[in-house]
Image 1 (tube, chains in turn green, purple, blue):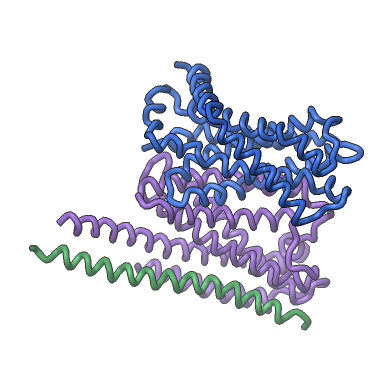
Image 2 (cartoon, chains in turn orange, purple, brown):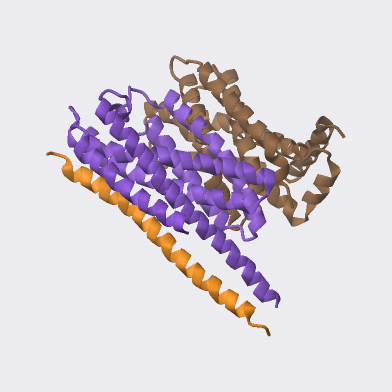
Length: 47
Length: 225
Length: 224
């Protein structure tokens, strides 16, 4: 099967791009949630 | 939250099913052989990406009209997701083209307008990063988004009518033209799969944008105290 | 004041401002000249190649020049905050855009007309036979560049890194103008000239579409 390598490369790289995007989003989301919790805590503590 | 997890799960399952259909259910194409299977992924992603950009356009219009932040969030979300799709299309396309036509690239209508589309939405995101004030950023990027989107058909036809000199290699010949019923079904199934997956990405990205906004609000409150 | 009256008044202001110093015109002409010369150094074309590539290069030079020339369009107003006074002075904010884009188109076309003899000389392309059609294409193409450029200039003026941003936003958007203007110009300047009316029509449609978009959305571009 002549061009099987190309087919695999296309699927792998293509899905790789999607995967990288999702992972970067997940990381940013979890960082933001931490930040959000931190802010909520510091604001709920009366001064 | 539970709905998002279910969506993610369903999207993953569909992706696996789509790939299985593309590799095992679809028959081998006569002229291109195995190579043609890239299309189930490539063309379906292109379609889903274009729909994401369309949603972005509608969100831009709605923001200019209603000025509600949620439309701005939807706009940037769909622009980013659409851009990721277009990137995948621009990568998988040449990987197919090199063995099929012997060249990585050609300046025909579809390829060129896809590339210009990619440039325009990169500019959209760049513009956003260069404006700090949130409402101004939302308005100006929405307006640029509108101009960019109405430009796309103009780009496509200008190249189609004045640059494509010879009958271009039929890019969507195999699956889209309905020659083989099984291929056609696998193709449309993959189109559905990619749309669900893109929807999943849009939901996740939108949530991120909303959280960012919440953090911004709280930060301003914290500074005010 | 009606739209026509406001536009005429503002147009007069734009033209007077420019002709007082003529700095925009002179720098734009010199820039196009430099770009054309540099192209010759980079490519070193034969006579045939000059005829084939020359018009395309001319249009490329025009695009580059325009993306620089359009920078001050709204930046100038920012410096003395004249934009708010302008908005108060007119009933229809579209007048501001109309005046600016007409002025920009005029400046561009004037620059191109002054450039044409030099272009014809450097690239050995006779332009007189088809001059009227050439001027038509130059006008329609420049109008397209101006309309999009004026709108985008209003956007980039409100962002950081505006000098780099405007070309980045503008040049991809103007792809259709570049492709069609260049192609129509090439076929006009061939040994057996052909007038591509479809192309000329396309440029007119492009201009109309973006003018309409600017008319619909212009006031939002000027919001404080």
